[in-house]
Length: 140
Image 1 (cartoon, rainbow, N blue to C red):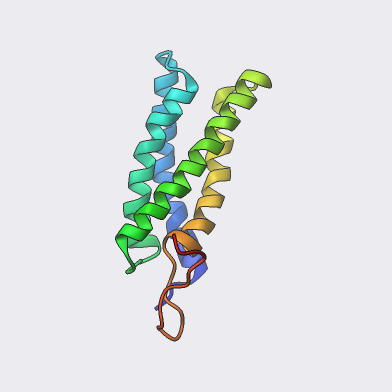
Image 2 (cartoon, helix red, strand yellow):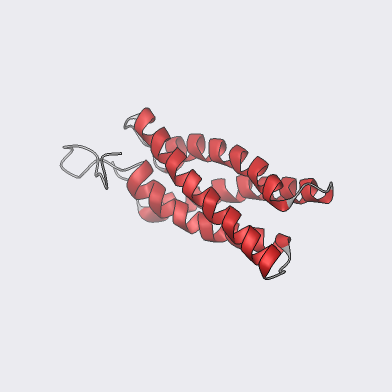
């Protein structure tokens, strides 16, 4: 049975708030210890990626498809997200001289929106209504 998008969004937000709030506090702690913002983001990003995959696969999207395919797609999605996050952090802090704390907070919100859509339709696709298989946006 395909869960409603509202129920999935609620669960995604609950997981995201818990994992990203923890990661953001860790990010702030690491940067307060003079770790460069891009390195602190890298450390916290890896942890959130693992938690997100496990929690969203099981609870948010109730995915029953190939775990290998989903893991590969998750890795690609989060790699792209990481590159976007890293680029934005460098550009807005080192070029535009904005506060890294605000930039990272904004990137968490932006990427959460991107990740929900991509996880719902690509990483953890639902079975079609006629039960013939998963909706696929690509073969990867």
